[in-house]
Length: 267
Image (cartoon, rainbow, N blue to C red; front, side):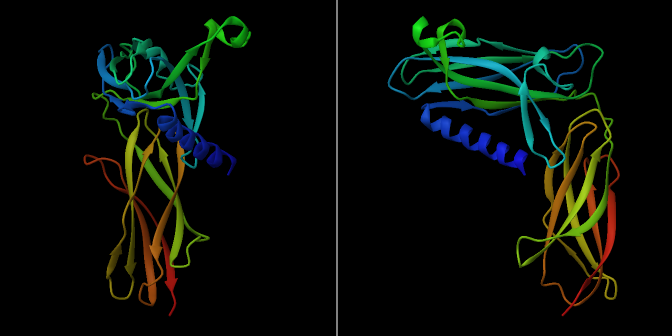
C-alpha cells in the first residue's frame, strides 16, 4: 500500500508541476528499437509558456517495477536494467525565452553484445540561479532545482523475438465493487525483453457452453519479473457452473497461455 501511495503522489506531483512551472514537455514516453551496436535518436520538445526567461536541466533516472505494477524511482545507473549508460541527451542544459521552445535530441546505442530491454527516465526541471549565500552548501553550481517532470524511456532491440511468458494462480479475491466479482492471476515474463500483454477473462457455462468474454487488462511485463493482475466480471451472469479462464496474449506469433478455475453463480 505504501508503494502505491508513493507512486500516486509522484504522478500527482508530475502533473501539478507541468502546470505550476508553466512549461510543456512532449512526448512523455520514448520507445527505442535499436539493434545491438546501432544508434537511434528521437526528439523531445520543451516549451516555455511563462512570461520570463527560464533555464532547464535534463538528467537521467531509473525505476523498477514491483509485483503490483507500481514504479519505484531510483538514481541513474542504480538498477540492473538501467538505460542511463546507453543514453545521451543533447543539450542537457539551456535557456528559453518566454513563449519559446527547444528541441532536445535523445540518443540510445546498446552495446554490440546486448539485445535485452533497458528502461529509465529523463527528468526535466527548471532551474533558478541563486547567490552562493542563498544556494547553500547543498546546492551544486548555485542552482535551485525545482520539482521535475519525468519522461519514460524504453529500449528493446527489434531483432530480439524471444518472447516467453506464463500465467497462473487464478483465484477469487475480495471485491471493492458490489456489482463485480474480482479475481487475481500471476503473470511472469520469462524473457529478457519488455513484453506488452493482454489478459482476457472468459466465463464458459459448463451446462450450455455459452461463453462470456470481458474487456482485457493491458499492461507491460518487464524482464524476469512477476506481476499480479486484477480481473473483473459483473455479478449478473445467469445461474450455473462456469469454467473461468484467464488467457494471456503477448504477441501474434506466440501461443496463448491460460489458467483456469471453476466458479458457481447462484441465483
